[in-house]
Length: 150
Image 1 (cartoon, helix red, strand yellow):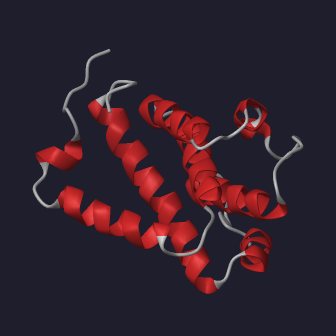
Image 2 (spheres, one colour; image 1 turned 90 degrees about the horizontal axis):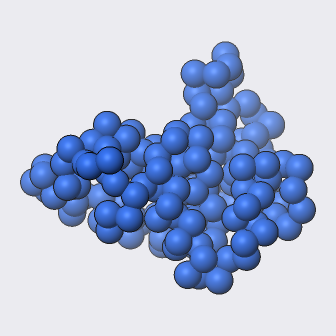
């Protein structure tokens, strides 16, 4: 499949710089890099963004992530090998991504579990990572950004 735009962040002046600033803030918030990347990959799986799933899995592999954890990410609730903090982040990521699926999209129990593992700055970084991944997914799918185009 060929893409409709090479990349939307280059086509819209100033967007790439703004996204870069946001990425810098997220990575400075104190959330472990692996957790940020697992969240990115899980949100991308939910949204069906092939480009982001492929690039996210490659990034995690390059960082030393095990094949078992990558293979089982879609079923993290039932799978061994994820920390309690990672599970809390993944729960928040799923709830925050599937906001139309239930009347109370992010229930207090999900938020409170994340807050048990992350301070307010890290929570803000985690929420920003979830939102930014959704942003990229919702841009890359309509422009049909091809897998491997990076």
